Image (tube, rainbow, N blue to C red):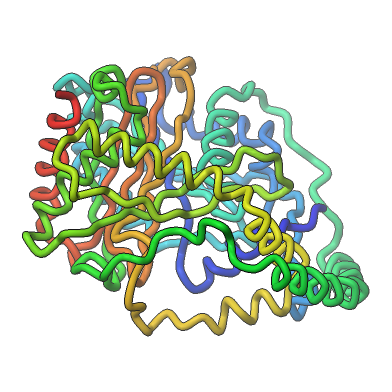
Length: 434
């Protein structure tokens, strides 16, 4: 049993108000076993992955942060769908999964297997038939980098028939124990919160407070419950041929596509980029969101790429600012009941005047393409960052081996003509390669 870090508890409590499950999608070539047999093996493999043998225990009365407790993976956590479908119809089905969020106190993850799926984009204009595997995982269990590692551990774990065993103490005993610990911990945490808050006041504002927000666009409204998903699969070498890293190349392509989609009134646009922290942390979610200007005032794509890259570098450096560090230290000791009260009190109905970015971009390199699934080679991987009441369009950038997939997640209530935007984005990639 392990107490949640503050950042992970906040993510868990926020999911009650804004569903934030991660959906990690992996495409494989045809397997050498049936899909049902593959599912049975994946359950056995999951028992060998520590992070997949956890669920959430809520402390009564929010007297403390939740705890991670042991939970043996169950067969019903792996769902199999053998209905033949195309890649596009598979994406529609994955989009429907958003309406069925996890309850991490019961199960912190779920696996979905689809096959056969035709017209899978294998890059370079090729398409194949294969299997799609989607790992739906609680954001509290890990950010994009950690969730990607969990998925890799699952696919590469040894397969055997041993059961896990030894999964947990009786619930009533755990309730009483964690409640008592939380009550004892509260006074010290409250005093530490006040003391660290005073330190924040003494330090003052960060030296680099960040850019002002961006005006709302037609994309910054409630997306409703339905989702539209699209994916562009690119060759990594071609994407970075102009000398920019993957993330920068994608941001420049977005800077080409968004103004054309939104119209001539757009003179200043930025994205909300997730930036992983390099320092070690006990938190499973170790990142921050920063605003990155797309520099529409610069026409040359190479100069625009240079400016965007400089902004990302500056945002990483700013994370070490003493004022920001002090603010994080306050959050780390704030009593659970106060943190949860703040999340519940947060007004989701009132639209802000500005946003950190008009769209969200999450970029994760998922490593080498050096594993398969029961004989089916890995083709590509992607993911779909969650939408929110003021973010109706998000982008995922996920690379594995020599392929990079760029996803577009939106809603028919926000972007009913999503395919028009996807074509503009494709044209933007053509521009960045020149």
